[in-house]
Length: 456
Image (tube, rainbow, N blue to C red; front, side):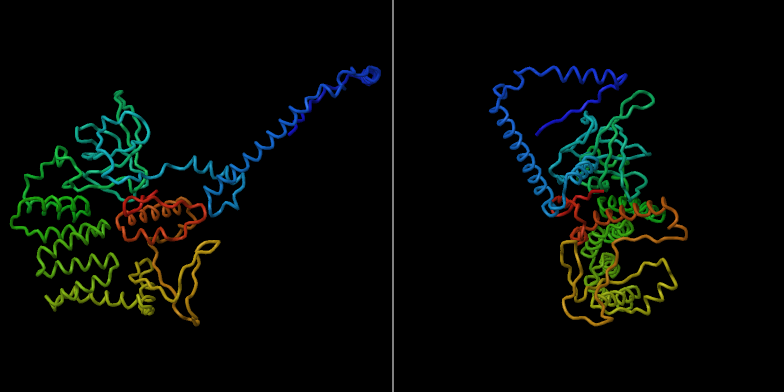
């Protein structure tokens, strides 16, 4: 490989000087020693050429091997500019979520957070009261939960997993720890009765001194104020109090209802199941469990519980209406829809949530070179129903939204965050969601035990 250097000479003052230089040069022959071939080291030149060639080949081989390992499916399409683009994109990307389960992390206090950066291998339990976050020892901090769809008001406990640690200087000169959580799977709201909360830190409000009845009534008041997490927490506290005139199944049924309002459908099913186990003869418990299964779109389980309910209480109006809806949803899973009824709903309530079931006809999904495609598994005729699938989440546009760029961006972000919230709370949705086509540059999500780490 040769290097050629060119330098521009300054302009000559006149033509005569140029001629003079040419004449002088032409009559001054170069020294004979410079033309002597013995002064050229042929061996060194050959070694230089060989080493340079081998270096170029080794660099190219390393480059291609790296591309194949990093991008096994699309390595043929990756060139040097594309590689640089991907590297820059990776450097600018936000660090991913924690991939360690809770039981492999160590409990950490704020006073142990000495360095800025990510708190690797640790988790914190914090409590907010009057807008101030603090840990077990009363050390206060600043906590920012980014990309968060769920808004919880009042007092509550948060379990924070491997947060990003920073430091903030207050006006009085005091240094305070500032924590940042970026991903939905890196934090959770804890009921004050959770075993993950240290005993010395548990419930500074003194709820252990209150009776079941008092806690239940306070929870009912918060529920009426649409403070559903506060109500849910108080119901959980009531269950830990000694039994009195308030039966356990009633409180568990209230827990299930509050969990439904919080979109915690898995938790709602657990609480409703506990209520039914505590008192199988109460029709309200069977109805509540059926409602929870219906909300989770498990129509067969809902139908089973409703049939048991109507055996106990044949005149139960709510049970009969919900059973009709369950049977209609089960019929829809076979491809039979009441399109006239659906059309009427859309005409009368344009922004209504269509309560219909999914249906998969004679089709299957195959993965091709350019992504996933839908293929028929048998011959179909014009008008045959192939597929009915509801979106996991959606938003409604109002007049003028299409012309408002900021409004559209906010709606899109809200939709994404609500999807992440649903995936976090309903583990049964995760597998099907992550099997969807994600594009060529997608990265497989990390797993934590039997669930996924949600990168938001």
